[in-house]
Length: 302
Image (cartoon, rainbow, N blue to C red):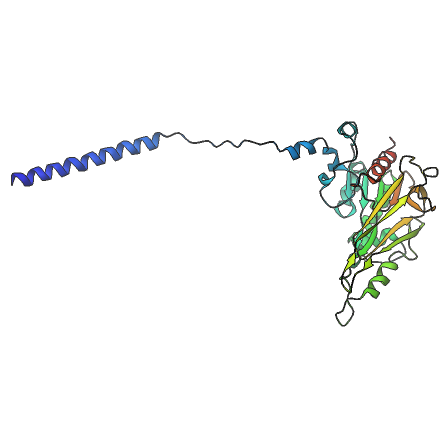
């Protein structure tokens, strides 16, 4: 009997000891302070190189791709010295009702090339065709014209393009014949602010029924007849099966050695419309980047 009592007391003491240890452990857990995580920012050498080129976030209207892909042709000091205080939007992104209330909210509205299946040719007015393609109403088009007349600048790098797989015949086969017809006729008999349009049509070399070879076109500039004397060579990258670019035959700012206008301007009351080909701007061996800076500051009166 005595042994049973001693065993019972021993078990009771063991259980009491475990409970007290658990109580002390719980107390310690409750007293643990909240852990605060701090995230250290590690500087990337790549980003540090780009910091000096923040200016490219506003680089004039060259592409729908991120601007910071541009390496830049000039030194960091050149970019830091530029004053690039201007406001610009693609035509498709403009709120025309707000623009009507505050015309000074934008300095530039720009237009880029369109895929041929998105382009709608409904009239002989190229601006109306472009606006219709972007679902811009007649009322909004009137606001756009008024904005230009009050001093706005419309920057037009417009054209149409097509791969070889965009258009098919009724049998479901690729129709290069129809593609050529659509591209070639994109700007026939059209005008921009009363100025006739000159088409620059380029076609890639065929490899087979489906494939073609992307290429490029170089232009040597007549510096004596051009507005910007330091623009000497320009390049156009041709990545599609066919491309057609529109130049309005206004006052030429850049001409090549064959006498072809590559950049033109059309004064419209207090404002300006400029047209140009979408020249390559990343290749430092050509003057596409410099042309854009020159044209930008020229239009801003600097």
